[in-house]
Image (cartoon, rainbow, N blue to C red; front, side, top):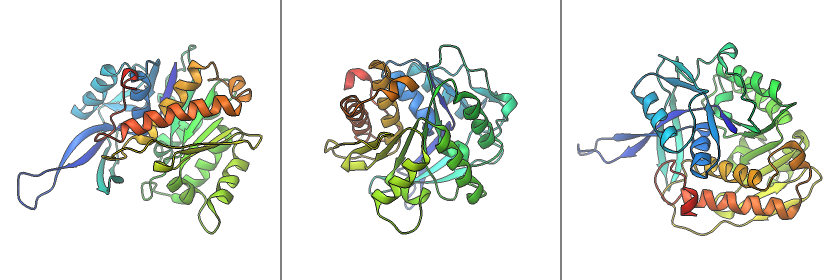
Length: 309
């Protein structure tokens, strides 16, 4: 089983309004951990969400979509607190977010609320948004600290400017998580936010690699992806050219594709990562890129089923 730990929320996507000049939004299930759990389920993997789910109508919507995609909500922390909402603005298909999160089911998770990790678990993925604000941020950091000795950990930085109440503390926490995780994935935008200031992309990526103990993956949108093994070996793959509807959930689909490819090749473990060579890494990146490319051809976070690939 692969546990997806972190954010589960509702993306409020722009929709046509019946009123001239008005604005309307349509609720879509989202959040990096949620989307990755969904995508893994659709790829035929055994996945479970570790997050806070509300008993409200949006929480029920999240549960129904998990079940429909073959992902489990059995490890989710249930409460009557409201579901987090993320209002999305799309510019040329690229998403920007404004969050409504105070007192939410997701944010309210405390360390004592976290479930026991099932014995069949082979890996845990953490979403960066859930590391922004207390108490959920320390809860997931606590979980990572206690699991990194026995399980493979992956971190998707997924930085959203303006969401953290204390940006300095948030970046320090991200730095500690980078040092704990076996796989660190970030986008070009994440790289600029995590390593601000002057320097080329290659120089900034090298700083991330120096801080991370394992594999580092940089996603480049239409340009594909670049991965760097701990010994410095780099592997690049190109992305297929497609008509992009929007990029919501593309990185999460990439996460699922990469983890699924590793598991099916017998490499989803710390020992598996240590024996990973450039050929096996390229195969996993190619599959992950295919999954992500498919997801951007339709609206919202709607990852493909394995048979669609």
